[in-house]
Length: 335
Image (cartoon, rainbow, N blue to C red; front, side, top):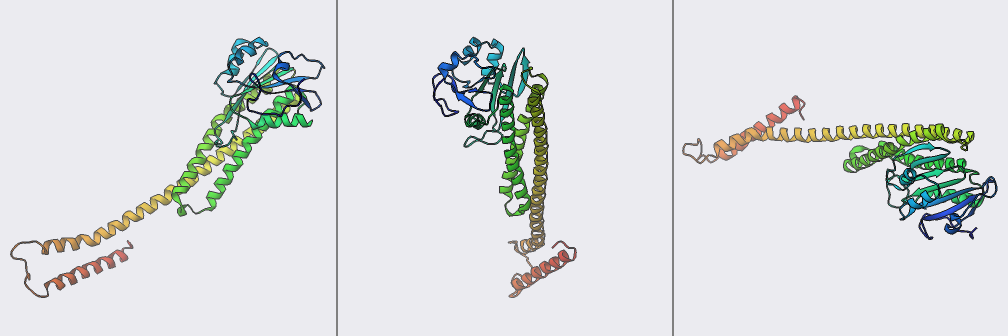
């Protein structure tokens, strides 16, 4: 076996291997490199080989086929079809899972996928984008408190991915709580942008998490015998947590819709008030404009055109009309 290699999710070594571990069955693991992994054979009865690959490296599919994986399955493991699913193929388990993308600059709904293949002795995981979950799992193994077998490794991977989903859901709930405590009229444009982002995140998470639920159900029901009963129970608990998270997402969506309706109501009321005031102003000036337009016609015969006080008389009439209109508008409760 190779000397200690720090777990990394960036390509540092020859070939497609990102990192490898040989589980000792006691919660610990020893690192294994690409060359040693090519010829690994199970020594002690409880050893399990875990290899984590970058599936975008050329030749990955051919390597999988050369190590006993059927062509259709190898093609699936290296394809871009990452919709969550799981199925049993003889004594092997194949699964496509998705987790929240916590890489810098990524949005919560930008899910990252990991493809899993295992025959109980070997566990191959393949990814395109960097994942924190696999790094943390490898670190736990290095520290001696990781999973003990293939079933435990897959279960731990699933539980960590679902736990990270919870972090994103909690963040969205906190954002909604903050919006509910903030007066919507203070910053309608900013509030609308935040509500839109929350709804977009909710829809993205729900779109990916719903089929993940079906994939986990398939693992619990159809996993081979080496996937032990306690692993199935833990998967069942993970399914229950995923259901609760889906319910939380639905609540978050409904809360966002309520906030959006409130914002629309306030915006519509503001617009209606503005239009009403403009209408009142136009109603006041309409008769005044008519009078000034009529008196101001440049034709012969305008009454009192030469009278020295005719201008002030017209101003007084217009002012009286405006005051009468204001009195009527207040009496009718228009103002």
